[in-house]
Image (spheres, rainbow, N blue to C red):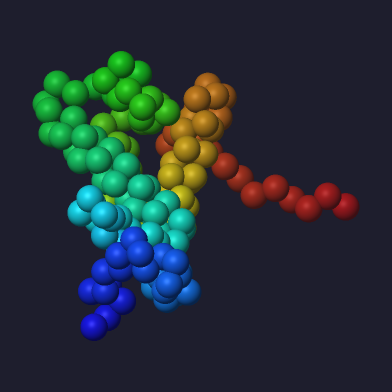
Amino acid sequence: MTSNELIFQSTDLAQRRTEFLHAARSGMARLRDKDGTSLVMLPEQQLHLLEELRKWSSVHLRLERMLRRPDFRPTVQNLGDLAWLRVFDCEDLREFAAELNEALVAADSDNSTMPLDGCLKAWRTTARQLEDPLRRSVLLDKGLDLVDAERPE
């Protein structure tokens, strides 16, 4: 019987607490309460990962639905808690949704929020830069004629 199949009883907490804690540290410990309620103990980092995957998967699905609407325009009102994305056009939002999907798959596969955190940080940083009109014009000006600077003597 693996530790995931083993179900402890509430009375086991006094007699087998070391085994229960070992199972929890190893990934998950199941406990059946006296009233039949099933409880689970797992490392906090694992819970955080599950919460982030749930939250951002929901956000991803909602954004994908919005982007499928032909009349969709990225405004503060229709983006809601994603209002920080308002500086992007629909094409950029589709790119964000694709990258978010990849980050979710990688985070789940790696059992870590790092890919997701990195994706969100990069997009938020870009959004902050685009909010400044001067930076926006420099970043988005396709006809900008840049030349190499010479090293000062």
